[in-house]
Image (cartoon, rainbow, N blue to C red; front, side, top):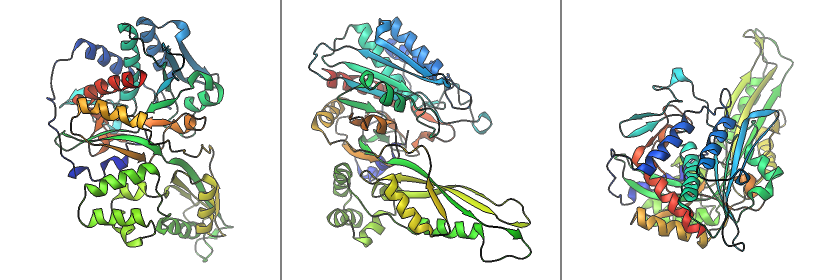
Length: 469
């Protein structure tokens, strides 16, 4: 998940909060069935190093078939050179052939988790103090489980949607160099996953420190993730006779240039709507600065004030940051080579090639800069479509009365880029609330508030029915 992300939290403390549901209550029978699915998915290790998405997909397939899906409704897939990185597509046929399908997208794989670093076993679902703890508790097994559970409930209850509902759960989202199931489907099975639009991770909601919901967010657009390698080389020599021509220093100078450079402020329809709403909720200097920047993206003073918030800063522009370093070959020798990885999150409408050109300009002639493979598609922001935003607001009024629903652009990236590249608009669905610290997503002791999980499940179930008819 790349990650709810960050922009959701802008100005949230100024929004009125709702009472939080009781943290401990007996599960309804349908919730118990969901819990069993969720627990099985959590406790199936799907990390790249030691897990199997193929096993997780097979388990979900078995549950779908037990609910009444025919073999012909389900496609499980993998490729010979990545047998453990499989996924699943399931289809619930609609009654209206004129209505284009909708797609529910999620990923089965999780970020690596070392047992010795965690307080609890990351691949055992642990209930503690009103939370479920486990790797993938949020990212993305909460949504993957909700989507699979919804399809099971639809089939078992005899629900007949007007619009065909498709489910795609894939592997490889969390690791750039891994086999990516969403990319494979888009390239090899586009008809299987063809849809009018898709619902994905990237939206959600925010709780305050007391667990009270503060706002909902629907993701409408995201950045593209791209890594670049900076490399300097030198003949080296004995460290007792240093020279100014030093690979480490040259690399350091290039990285300092990247550090101090600010990409220009940009707006999409989504971010303009988001900042307009944020300004209205933030009277005073911050709100005034946002309005000034909306009127003039080159207002440096307004940019400097707003960009004190790292989430706002990243929502306004392309960002690039050094994430890995490697240099030298001996402690008593001048370095012959120094390399760094620079991770960029590219604003919609900007390109990998354009960003590469700017990085080369910043690095100077002594540093070689290359774009790393894979080079993923340029992010294409979908429209702020009333047929998508309207139902999300209407269902939210039932579950979260009085809570604002804001459009946001994720500062991260998801597998949605592969489906957007073949003409499927992808939206991050609201509904699953997280805490101000992002619940340990991608870090240690990942968790989800139990009440948030079950309330989000109910909301998303009704939201899919609202879109499907």
